[in-house]
Length: 177
Image 1 (spheres, one colour):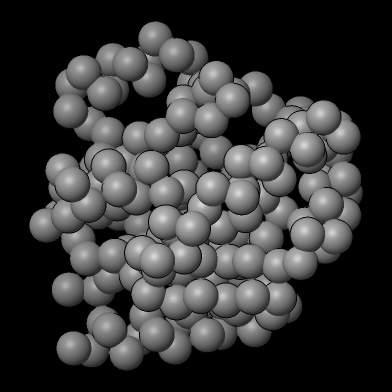
Image 2 (cartoon, rainbow, N blue to C red; image 1 turned 180 degrees about the vertical axis):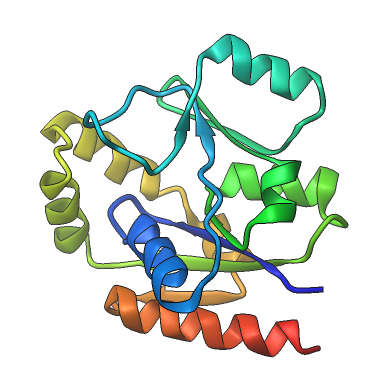
């Protein structure tokens, strides 16, 4: 069975960009995870934005296979998304939730993306994050050692295209086994 690629890592490490390259260059389908957070900008399409009540109903119905919370907002990926897509951006708690409850649905290829702090900071500024948000995210990111330990691939400071190529090669290798 082909693996489901999970991109985890620090804020600004390029998870969304790598997912987009995997989709555009390699034809892998990205699952637009659900979130209750507001959009950063009006045409943001990195998630499916829903109300908290809708999210909680999905959880109650057993539809969500990966769930996490950050900064007072909920994030999740449904079972249907995992079965119908190839890649998603999760965090450590969402990945742990999936592995503990739904790991038999589809094997994971867990990829941890990382970069230097100054590069992460600049990327967050470019996407419009406030200085307070950047500080909060960098403090949170310091707790991601579990993500590094659970990762099948650790990728640091590659271009999004090179990271996607490395991930895709491993995806193809695992798919054929």
